Amino acid sequence: MATDRVVAPRTVLIGEVGLGGEVRGVAHAGLRVTEAARLGFTRVIGPPSVPALPGVEILAVDDVASALARAFATP
Image (cartoon, rainbow, N blue to C red; front, top):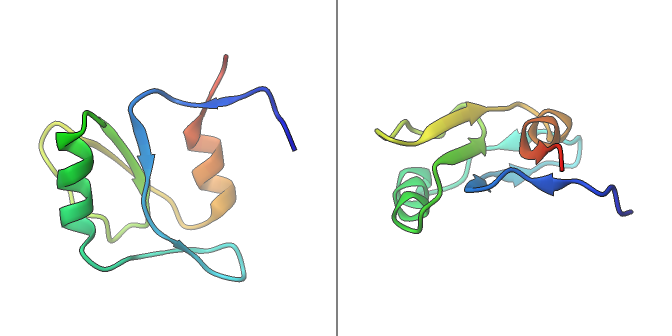
C-alpha cells in the first residue's frame, strides 16, 4: 500500500520482526551500526539492544508500529 511517505534521509532500520510485530535484536548489531555509519547513515532505528556509536543517533523501538512512526518523514 502506497502511503506517499518516505523514510527520513540517512536512516537505517536494524532488527528482526517477530510474528507479533515485535522488533528483536540481531547478531552483530554493533558491526551493522558501524557499517551503516561508514556508509553515511546517521540515524539507526532498532531494538533497545542496538549499541550506541558516537555520531549516530540510535532510536530504540519495541514494535513495528513504533519503528514506522519514527522512520517516516513528512514529504
